[in-house]
Image (cartoon, rainbow, N blue to C red):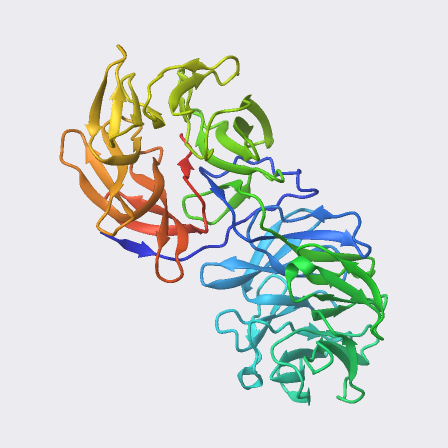
Length: 527
């Protein structure tokens, strides 16, 4: 029953500008889900840590940014379907281009070419034009290049320095490879503005970063902590501390500390004027809502409020709004979001929910149905006083509007139940779990106890036909595509390492992964 293609594609094609609150105006992709990945947004800030501006607020795990010499573009690494991909963001137009496989890109001094680690094997360097054309492998596989290597172009554009099994200098075409120091294993290198010295990850007994003359002489310790040094045009060096949460050090070439930029900051790179840094900022604390297309080729972060856990999102019938649960310490709210403007409105300020993750439902002309305190309630999308539907000793959860005016829900002693218009109820699927009706009302997809202990499987019941198992291993609730031909759900693969994916599955049981590390239930936007 399982035919899964596990590949996590590149997440974004268009970037928003400005601060974290500024967003793109184009409609979001059709699947919304809560997620808490270790996002790395790229931020620009002054060397004193002030004036932070997020330039890639889309949750793609961007890293290793590099400023072009004219300050108009930023190249960086971002996840792709077969490894890291080099992307170039034009800060004037906000246009993003993916220019080819690679990681840790760096610009040539004339801004026409890039050098990067070859992410197809991580054992060589590649150069390419800024648009990705004229790609060339340099043939340096014997030098110990690895994914931690951060190459650097010399100020005159003739040479490239990098750390493999030592510090190397090579001509830009890959000829004349020369190891000038034995210290260092897979790290960063950066040239001084005058081209006479190189800062690099030396990892000696006393120092983690050092500087050395381009001929390999005059080794000097730079700092006892920090990696991947970057030398600015103003003769300052920035380096990432070992733990990203510890931030970035800014030091003089002689080792004197100038400033410690604290926070989840890493991979600093100086602007051409040496006044600003572009840095990868790691976001780990919140659970936020994202939208992604069915192929996983783009994503858009919809909520970014600190100190909240946003879960259980559901699209409105017209696809224009989203209702979700927002949890803060001691409070669970029902919130409506406009995905175009990112504005939110609290619909029900406090619901009696222990875990604040029970998914609501939005019916066409029937209001928003939700669970609170084990009973079912409905509230108008415009707000106002909620109306209680049930008041029973048993807990009723996961309510859904049924196709013919009834209400479906989960209730003890187990199974999917239906509440009829006269208030009576009947058992629809014994032992059934989280469920969803198709838009035409003919099919029911639901989770039920699977063959593996502690795991639910996905079942499909069409009309009066017996149910059939569609997939082994489903987390939470499935959601139908607008044409009722596919389902999307969250799946945790126990091997390797209990990785979690967003899966899209056809009714024939063929599934593919489209997004990594989701949390909770995705919902497919209607037509």
